[in-house]
Image (tube, rainbow, N blue to C red; front, top):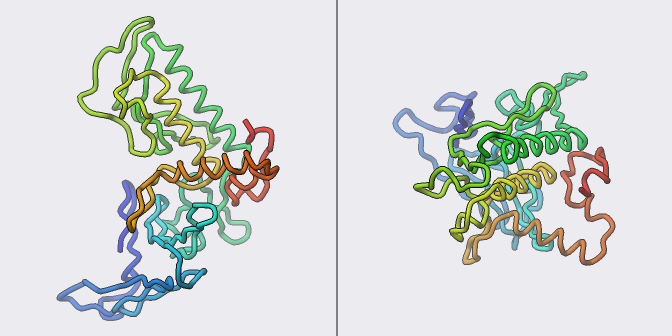
Length: 278
């Protein structure tokens, strides 16, 4: 079982520190059988095993190799419609590729641990990216529509100043005129694409605004909302749809803590309520 990213790769199963025989394998074949049963137990023919923290029947689960290279088991919370982590291969993020994952910093004080930017730094990243998009949309000689705004295309420097990159799908629009050309295919990334693409509507800067809105919500929540969930006969829907439905229900019910409940719990209260409500 392997994470093969654009820059680094990691092998989770079999154990990369063990030799062929220690891992219960032979030089002739490396295949093994595994099963994730209804109780939330992972068992394999080479004796690798683990259990979900909420082990029991009646829980829908999924095993996912996440964007940060960590292998995690998720359990669906039927009351909220959100996926919660019930097991992860590496609980200490600094051990994943020797990194701390996206937006993570490894701190050695005194022991190594991961730190994510607190709320105000995420807010500054969001504001800085908004300014960059505003420049592309309104201040360039030819207005630029990026068409593929997503977290992977927003880079941060050492001071967490955002830089928008990857303009391979750019659409140019002259001031007061139509676009400079048509697309031969629908561009963008699934989960971040605005409805205009599917409905064959005019493409304006609003498609970037939609994509960036998804990215901001992911930054706020601390998880991928662009993923699609469902299965076992259920119709697939975006994690974003479930998240928005949950937040809308909390607001309509007049819950005062709806902001705290929708933020990344790893912030541990280190955020400005005024900033987040914006």
